[in-house]
Length: 620
Image (cartoon, rainbow, N blue to C red; front, side):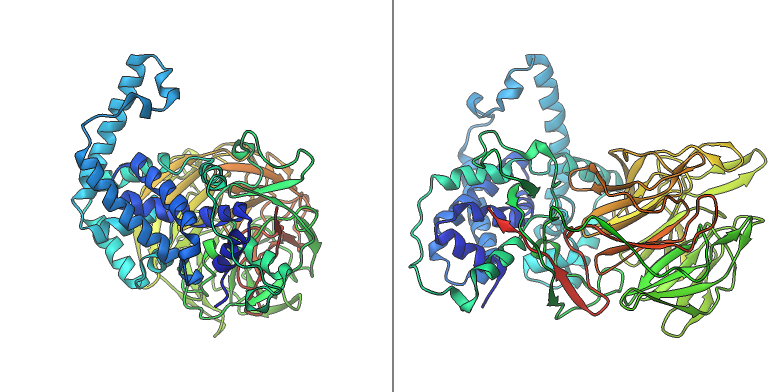
């Protein structure tokens, strides 16, 4: 059976030990989380994780079924944890001096002591809370929060169903107090595997000699060397910045003149790339009821130099408008309502097919409005809030693209316009926005959760920063609130802000993240794979072309190619890994549509024709 893991194992056994780093990058987070669930000690879990990969490499020749590599790691981890626990029980209390971090030993002793005491107190409280849970509940909780795995990934890792994982996750949360969940989330964020982990493994691997495979004239399964390179590239980790120099090791074996990008911790020499379609087989419903994308750690292609990061002009939207909203269902983009002139809303709905580059008129929305937001759950589009030009709305209307009909739903509790909504795990979260009171305009931090199945609303934790004209995107079930404004100078002249805050619906908590480089309001964001692209917007009365990419895993930003048309009040949607920037305005309302190719960022998604496209690079 041909697998990506199998191809990398073949390369390792044929004298290319550096290829093993791809397997480390691919599985290190899940193994670390699993080890911590067993040991309830972060340092021990990291040590065991390191030993797991070194032992796996030493014994690689003994693995008969290469496609079972992940299950094999699981077994090795379980056994090493049992040994570690037996050893720890015989160890005297306290740590040996030589085991301490040399950086800590260099600090003033009283400072180091206080720091260690605070950490130990926090970890002890967390340890007690987690130890109170049955192990099967503790496992899914830790894999979800510490390893950042989705319910589908956890189900695959543990060899069970997604329904079982969701049930265990729910029961685990229900047994912990909210403040403990919040503390756990904060602690886990600070205890992620440190940068350089993969390189430490590779340094160890260099000193291990394994018996090579017998050389044969042809490759296994009758595939070419070019194909083997393609498959190897699939396992790159999507969770580490490609340009972050902090992950460059000292004494790197790469020649000084080599041109490399970083994906995970593995340097990659970029070659010519081509797009290859892979059938998205055995798909089932995704988190929001749409098609399930391939597992992120199974498909993590590279961003190539010289390809991607480009803009292409597409067919104009028939009705020019700004402060519209757009959503994707079945590979087609639906642009909904918007402003067509001063305080003039238009209820128009138009469907765009990226495959044919054509537009089709659909049924008008019942309530004409702009400054609204739309989200998709189970193939239905929910249009929420906005303004009709005279007041802020609580209106919620559901659109069925298949039947081309609209239905009135339960009103949102808080009237507001220029809010943002995002769907996560079947619920829609309405975040921020603007309203008016006796003192004039005021900005909201309000977050309200809508359950489409029950048609009910619920109050959630406020966003830390009051703001409107922001944009939200979802990565790994978490909602990133980006930019916007919290200050009006005069009339519609607003100061843009660069604030980024992330909301975790599972714990109902917010956390501050790295600021966006360009402060702006009325921007649009879209997530492709595990990266968020912030596009357009403005500051005061100046519209921007700026495009900046955010990596949630490393909490870093980088500049990308500017959008050709400067504009704010636009909307963006993703189909087939391409971002479509639609409408908006500068000096006038626009019908412009421009397509952005991010350049093979991990997890592009399913194309409109139902295929999953991936690019390729070569391991150097």
